[in-house]
Length: 201
Image 1 (tube, rainbow, N blue to C red):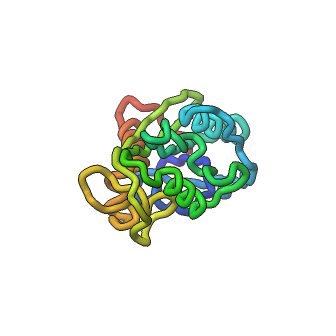
Image 2 (tube, rainbow, N blue to C red; image 1 turned 90 degrees about the vertical axis):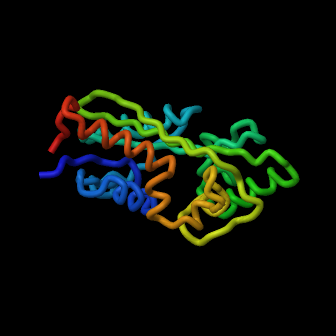
Image 3 (cartoon, rainbow, N blue to C red; image 1 turned 60 degrees about the horizontal axis):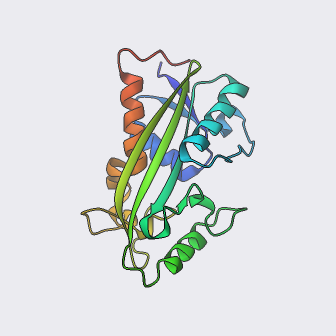
């Protein structure tokens, strides 16, 4: 039987992306699968803190091995913003991906430095032990959105050296080189290592 892990999200895009990266190695469950419909707080001031908050919330209440991620877009000309506020950059009380992109492009209007990086932190709690994994992709912010794939900031983020946005590269390519892919790959390497503790069935 495949080891079972809860991912602390109900974001359909994120679930699909992570499941595609993990492949057949693990049985991935969403929050809905374990009947968790709570709005888990993300009140920390770092990506690491938010990922741990979400993972601890699930582990303490359900007793299941779990991993949670937090991702931030860090833009050089904006002193690292939006950072931990990436998902709610336009409106602090709700997710609005299109509005987030509009605000980002407005703030970068006429700025020459468009360097940026996406960073994902994954917090794993397995049999009570906590582990952190990081994935990072450097690149820049495009002048205008391009491409129809992906979600969030994908239409305006160009990973370094490719000349295309994540939205133009397609899901398969993104799943190989994205910040989340790199963090999940580290997670998988840890979980499949011979000295890693067995996951809960």
